[in-house]
Length: 411
Ligand SMILES: O=C(O)CCC(=O)C(=O)O
Ligand SMILES: [Fe+2]
Image 1 (cartoon, helix red, strand yellow):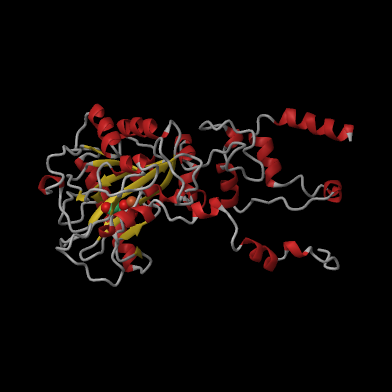
Image 2 (spheres, rainbow, N blue to C red; image 1 turned 30 degrees about the vertical axis):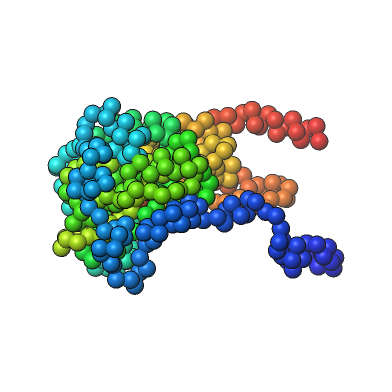
């Protein structure tokens, strides 16, 4: 860096800050707007979430002080979604109410196995002092590494989730045929926990408005009967449509209900519907699993590229790898350029970045850094991992090689 030259005054931090103080910057204002929560809280002050140190008030109309639809004055005659296996009904519930309930989505044996696995895992994480726990709930992250059944759920194998094919159909319809896993975790409400604030699961887009279709769908595995006592998820049915009608902002919204559903139900939830973890007034822990899936341009909540255990990756199916973000194209997820020729399809070796991750796991990945023609002459760079990956997996290198020669002979 040449320090002898002075930087033009207009580029200095003070000058830039001064010139931006009263700037007309509509995009900045838009990103700072806090929408859609600003309008939501403005029109519905009863939705204010409790502070972590707050004692929860009942009988004063707070959002968490509610009950199941069948006992709710406002909701009882509105024909809200009930668990069903009928795909026609599920599809229509999902569009109208923003969620649908798949009856026996997991068999009783599958539900029992998941419930047992996750309760054991959660207890062990608490006992080790490594659990993630807030006033609202405990969350067990990276289920992908914590039981073979969870890996199977991520590709919807009927051996672990019997409604798998139906779930995939509905996810494909809601998100387009390609989607990624955002995260797969367990949410555990404990006796005396606080409610979560009401939220949209696709809040990761900030104030950007998504009105045509969801960009996230949450697949919620219900592992025990849930209701108003033990923390059946709070939902404002149809709120995704209110959000759309308001052009991505909220006016007044109707009250929340507690979800009532038997163990084994799987709820699919539009990423725009308002919902949140409820209080648990029982004496037992309430376990659900949440597997959010998203349009594939979205950055994942769990960084699967780094999270997934090496032994799982080595034997993973192409479908699993695709959904976890290991299939690169020129538009996304390349490693040092490897993936540029990927066609985006599952199993295409040109975009199979898992090969880079395996090399890293085996401690044999060598990154390219700044290169000079001296490095070329000394053969230093030819042994880079990129060169090996290209040789082994890029089936389109021939044309690239011919073009490289052409560029340099013209030069
Ligand atoms: O625990 C629940 O019932 C809902 C959890 C939830 O909505 C979330 O963590 O985003
Ligand atoms: Fe949520």
